[in-house]
Image (tube, rainbow, N blue to C red; front, side, top):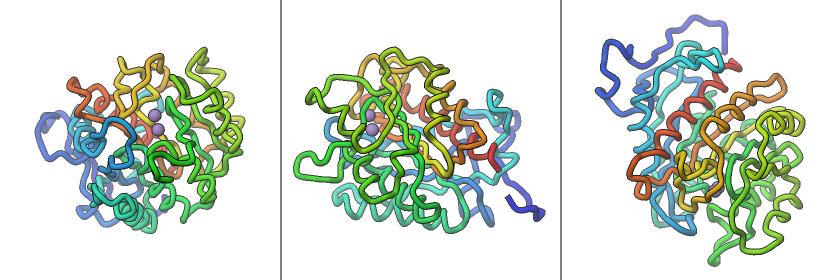
Length: 315
Ligand code: MN
Ligand code: MN
């Protein structure tokens, strides 16, 4: 952040305006157009037409914004009040086509790239996991091949499905092919579930990703592995199905045996390390139509706040 003097606009004080009242921007933050410049921007990517199973992620950004009304402003675990030290805004939703994936991706990339050019770090809210590809393209254009911390039940490194190379299950293979991601600086965490074959996990290891399975996960050991593998400019992608369904992991393809929210929070707090610079991130696969209690949206809003806090901490 530059040393020049400027006013930071945060949400209205929670004791002045009841948290359930007011406009539904993320955490009641100002909109992009309400402030002159921004450091961190929340961007909705409401696209779910590359999902292989249950659709509905297009409603994720709206549900996460609604759940974010509950959020307060101070992150005790990380020791930061992100809206006080950085200008955080809600940049609205990219106008992604729900019927033509190429157009959907182009709209998401254009919206994220404009924010990146303005000097903002983008926290994307999906949408199915395919939206990470245009978000990575926008972040990568600014910073070169990125390290990745990828929380997910799935590796998302298939080559193709149903005739398309661009689905929510292929994004982390395309990202390596497009040299958006440096797989030697990338970790996938929370992997589990039934598989299409006995070699399904090998395909992502062969691309270079380090893998940490949900089975037998040890939080402290996982943090040590992340800090050993990941360095430099880094993208953090959180597929909500890294969480157990009981904790809100209600994605388009949920899997049992997942992480608790407490474990995931501890892992995220472990990313506050000198060698890791988080340049952008996302929370994807919140799928409200299959989540009547709103557990995924509640988790998603809090996880987005953690990403914002981690980025603010660096500034
Ligand atoms: Mn995924
Ligand atoms: Mn997944």
